[in-house]
Image (cartoon, rainbow, N blue to C red; front, side, top):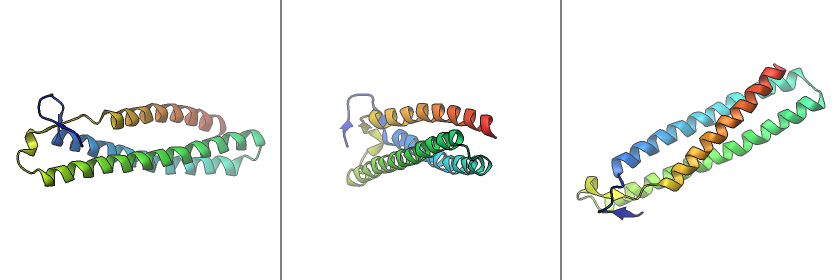
Amino acid sequence: MTTNKTNSNLHIEDLHFEHSQWIRELKFLKDELKFFVARLEEVAVRYTSMEVLKELEQFQNKIYIESNILDELIHDTNEHEHQLARYAMENPIAIDRVAFDDHSPLRERIERNREMQTEFKSDYLRFLAKWL
């Protein structure tokens, strides 16, 4: 946990707010994957051709991988939040005046995941439109 009292980085409230937003977003995406799986099951029941099943399996694999990525992002976000809480407990005086280094590596991973989700959803919806 790096703090910085001279640079204009982020305060603990800002980091906490962002963590809360990310956790809600990531949990929503996890729930959304369950819906995607259910729709794939509908396709699997309707079609038995190898072409369809091959594409379906690719989406199942992508969903499995994305679910693991989301779990990891949730874990890492929670871990960073716990580090902030630990710092606040150990240094309670004027915690609201301490500027923390931005958590940009985590933010970059979240943003990259958003881009990947957008691409995945686009491909997924094209697949559903083709077969449902």
